[in-house]
Each structure stands twice: as C-alpha cells, then as structure tokens.
Image 1 (cartoon, helix red, strand yellow):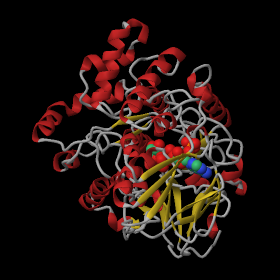
Image 2 (cartoon, protein in one colour):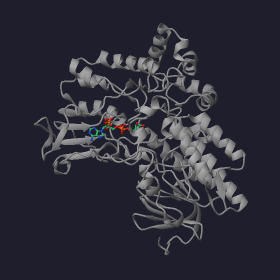
Image 3 (cartoon, helix red, strand yellow):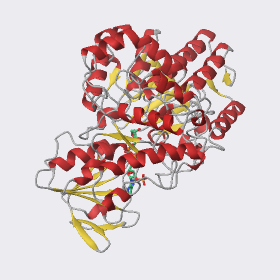
Image 4 (cartoon, helix red, strand yellow):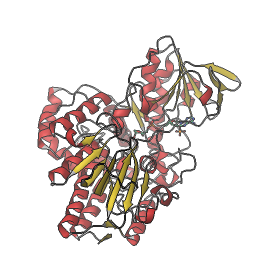
Length: 545
Ligand code: NA7
C-alpha cells in the first residue's frame, strides 16, 4: 500500500459507509473521543437507500421501528409520515440525522474505498479510494451494507441491447420517461414487487420476466395519524423492548393485537384450525411480511410452514383474474420464508392490467437479447427499457469487492472463497482491528437491520474502548472462536426448513458463490445475549496484543 498517505494524521477509526450503521458508528465513536473519518461512495448519506431510487422503493419494516433508538433528540424531533417509509423519506431522515448530529464534517463523500490493507508491523490499516485519496487508521469499522452490491442478470446479448438498461439499485437521478414506451422488468423479488405496479401505470406495455414467484403479502401502507403518533409516544419503550427481547423479525407487526403476536411463541398445534385461520387472517389484514411467521414452528414443521404458504397462495390467487397468471404467480417448490417474503401494494393485481404480460422464464427462458429486445421461445419482445430488479451479492459482496488484506497480505475475498468465516459476524481472524456491521454470520437481514446495527455499533465501540483502555494495539478473532461461531451459524439451519433455502440467503443467486447460510438465524435476542456475555467476560474469543 502507498507510503505517501496524504492524510498524515493517523485516525483512530475509519468508518466505511454512511448508511444507518456507518452514521451511527461515526457518531458513537466520535462521542467516545476518537478521531474518526467516514468514507462514502455516494455524494450523500443513505447507504443502500441512497442508491435504490426506483419508483415504489419502500421499506418493508414499519418506519416507527426502522429508525434509530440511540438518541433521545432524534426520537423527539422526527416524525414519520407513513407506516412504511418510502425511500425518499428514509434518505431525508438520514440526511437530517447527519445534519442534526453534525456528522458531515467527518464524512468524505464521493470516496469509494478500493483498498484496505493491514500493516502488520505498525498495526495500522492503510486505505485507498478510487480517487487516489489515502488514509490510515488503527481501527476499521466496515458498514458496507448487507444489500449494497447489485448484480446484473447474465443473459447472452444483453450488451447488444440498444434500449436503456437500469438496475433498480442504480436508478438514474433523472427519472426515465416511460410514457408510450415498452418496458421489460427482470425480477420479482422485493424490488421487482415494488417497482412493477408503478411502472405498469406509466408505460405503454410492460413485460415482466419472472423466474420464481415469491410468497407475497400486501403492505397495507397508510399515512400515520396523530393518533398513531400518540400511541407510539405512549408505547415506544414497551414496543422496543418487545421487539428486542422476543420477536425474531423485529418490526413488521407493531400494531398487531398482543394475542395475535403472542401466538408466534407457541406451536401451531396449540391452536385449532379455525383459530389458526383467524390468526393468519388477522396478520394478513394488518399487512407486512410477517403473515407466515404466525407460530413458533413455522420454520421447523413442514406442515405448519405449508399451511402458512397455502394461506398466502390462496390470497394471491384470489386477486388475479387470468388463470394462467394465477398459476404462474403461485409460489411453489420452496418453503415459506426460505426466500425473502415480498411486500407490496397491488402487486398481483397489476397482472390484471391489459398492458402487462407475465413471462415465466423457467418455462420460457430469455434465450438472448437482440438490439431491439428479448428473444423468448423464438419470439422477439421489443423493448425500449430493461429494468433489472435482479438483486444483490448479499452480505459478502460489498466487502469482497474491495481489496481487503489482513495480516501477511491475505485477501478477505480469498479466505471467504468457500464461505464467510467470522466470529460473531463482527471480526475475522487475520484481519485485526477490523469490525463489521451487518456482516455475514450476524443476524443482519434476518432481523430489523437497523436494530441489530445499533446493537453492533454500541458493542464494537465498547470493544474499541476496551482496546484503547488496555493499550492493546491488535484485536482479532481467535481461530477456535471463529471456527466455533461459524459452526454455530451453519448449525442453526440444520434439521429445519432453513436448510432447504435456495435464495440469496445462501448465496444461490450469484453464480459460483458457495451455498452457506449468510446470516445468523437465531434472532436478535439470542445474539445480543451472547455478545453481551462475551463483553462481560472480558472478550473471550478475541486475541489482544
Ligand atoms: P432479490 O430478492 O434477489 O430478487 C431478484 C429477482 O431477480 C428475483 O426474482 C430473481 O429470481 C430475479 N433474477 C435474478 N437474476 C435473474 C435472471 N438471470 N433471470 C431471471 N430472473 C432473475 O433482490 P431484490 O432487489 O428484489 O431484493 C433484495 C433485498 O433487498 C430484499 O429481500 C429486501 O431485503 C431488500 P429468482 O428468485 O432468483 O429465481
């Protein structure tokens, strides 16, 4: 790495990324008295929300829960306008947080990190950005985002296509004019489910290329009323406590009746068929992606899982008119929950529109792209735009896209070639003083990401404080602890329905990516308890020197 660091000052911590995790990390570490700089590839804060500008982009966790809890000032001054916040509102929130907490002065925007190399002799991280800026820091907090490295579909001839190709996570700042145009969309995951109904209303003809129909439930989004805010004021602490202590997913069912909520801690067999139906109906009417997580054994007992799946299949079939489209949109061949459940507004109903065609690319694959459009079954489908809602290289992709090298120059990408190995999803052996927020092996995307990020930021800041207080120049995962944690993360999906997952949860969406569960499925509460116990015991599993 360059020895001509332009920033001659040695930072205490360099934070990578200014999404939810990075902004909080910058704030907390600075409050702790450290000299911190945050690097952000975008010209603005927001992380993955900055880039996902596509129409309809909206969080599928309720806004009241998908926000910071660490600051009473933020709690007191911010008011969400809708039950599920749109992308623009989330970015406005993070911009406001950056201003309110005076974070911008320590953020370097338009700074895409390309290299992070650990200098073993000096126990220092050296960083280099795409623009050639260099930095040095003792600690490296990587908040690169679990869903921030977009992937394009690998379809022959796509480069020849003369129309405009747009990935949902790289949506242009100037909104494309779809009026009178023929648009194709690849992908019916969370992003596709949100973008399809909107673009269908704006274009002349929409062709949706769907590979796998997902389980879907309506969001039932609505404006938050004065009464909602009053309820939140009164119930905020209690609700947060409930989300943290018990609930696995954290935030899709804030206002559900306690009775319905509590059923998720019991086995389905403790309820009659009629009661179960009522519970599913209540969850469906409430909206959001947690309809099928109604009982404790939803991911353990195949029959329970199947019942939840059938309920959602029935709901989708009920709103689609065309029998062929009904069949195509019916999820099959995988267990409920092993692929991310999609949440939207009028997604299946969109296929009742006369200007929307649904192509199941499993039975009718896109053979290739021509200059004019997509070839399917020998037919050319002319397109002016192709929207790729094709997802992300999840959990590992953002970090492995950077040349991260630890002790003795070993490459993170290479050592993770057979799957990520971490301790607590936070630390990696051989990469001293590097800590991940929302990293592989942590609960991350299997929880309310903001809630888990916050917990990790606090925990890592304490660990860095501990190193400083004890004069430790190096802190890294011990080999046995890392092996044990990795085994635990992998073990949690053995013998239950998680084991059958074939989705980005296990890297199945990226050709060549090893099939391992990428996040910890044990839930926030168990994870936090484990991290807290490790902190209380003086950080066993870490090696300090
Ligand atoms: P997802 O959930 O990974 O969805 C990607 C979609 O694109 C999914 O329907 C894929 O089908 C489809 N896809 C990907 N490549 C192809 C090709 N080559 N041909 C046809 N279809 C393809 O990404 P999202 O952006 O929707 O959501 C990611 C997460 O962000 C989401 O879960 C939220 O947590 C936020 P597949 O299902 O793989 O058959």
